[in-house]
Image (cartoon, rainbow, N blue to C red):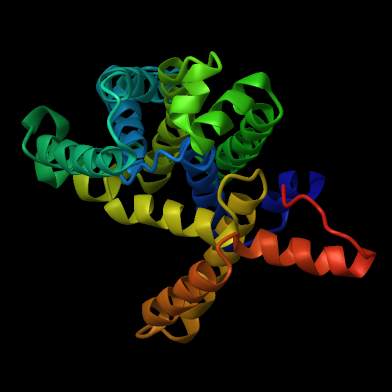
Length: 300
């Protein structure tokens, strides 16, 4: 673990940039898993919080002239407020899981269209930021966010709150019958899952030195979160971590070596794992390790 904090002292700019990208995927995937993995409510527009964080940080830094630490804090606060509003509407209305997925998908696209057509937000041309002083800053913030996402998931998994979320995943009506306030639990975890992506959006926008609605609200990021969580093992602590790390490396290797076919190979591999091993790579590792020690182990 400690070696992660000294990487900037010897790593090349390319490797450091890749590590920032990996930390971004890990944070987004683990945050998405907090909601979908523990309640079954799949968000297909989780990148909306990333995008809101991008623009909140950019406007706070460039328009309001706030200190970057305060700007990053606000870039996590605004997505949390947005999640509270959206969650209160959708969760209180008892929207079915399938409809929830569609509505969150639409939310991301609506945000993209609104920003692209709002002159005060740079329209579709985007906004240029003051360059980040050092790539190391982006790396350290992204690393802290990635570690934080794992720690938050651990806290959820081992708490009474997490037990309530798992009861919603098993059967929401039964969960209500045994005294779980399902609406409050879903809203709370939705808010928790929005904060780190918002802060992440801020630091990534700063690292880019530029933000536009098509980068900030890129739907591909939301889909990647789903794929990586499923690939590693949804509803677990370490599954999304494994999925994010493994697929980040795979994407980079395929992009370098097979630039024209990497997307096809990547997609086929993911489909194979999801269909043949629903529990993800963590399930495969658990079974292999279980055989080695002569018994089964819990996959998370």
